[in-house]
Amino acid sequence: MCFGPRGIPLAPEFPDPGYVSQGLEINNGIVEGLGSCTDSTVVIPSEYNGEPVTDIDISGMDEETIEHLVFNDLICYVSWTLGYLPELKRVTFGAGLKGVGPGVFNENAKCTVYDFTRCLAVPELQLLLGDEVCSFTGMPDDCRIYVPHSLYDEWINDTNWSYYADRIVPAI
Image (cartoon, rainbow, N blue to C red):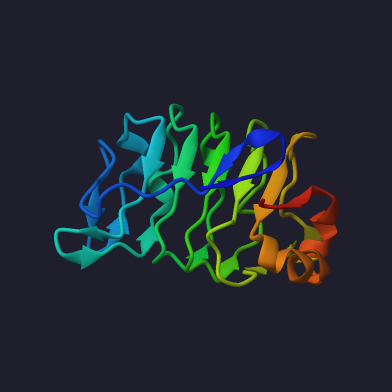
């Protein structure tokens, strides 16, 4: 396990491969019912009923009890806003993340930890929606973006991520 500054644990181990958070509705490899989940920590499984889980449908993102969302290693692009989860305090991304769409992190007033420490490369961050910068708007002052120590320099020097360099912290 990795730890960030102030001893915050990062990148928790994923549960057994067959684990499914309570209430998730998964069809054809897509989480369609995240909003019905009763867990405060939701782990998106890598596999369900023998099929890989590779996506989440935005329509399921409206639950007020989810505080921590853990992505599996197969989800490679996130294109919907996490602002639909008003109680979200922490997001842990999987190793396969390759890109983040504009507006994904908008209006997460309570989210203070974005954990990218499992990532194997710096994911592309799309900042603009039209002419407007719209990633991480409404971010709390104490929010931090944790990244692998080995990728820290590349992360803060990336054209789009550098916009948030003062919040990017290497995992120890």
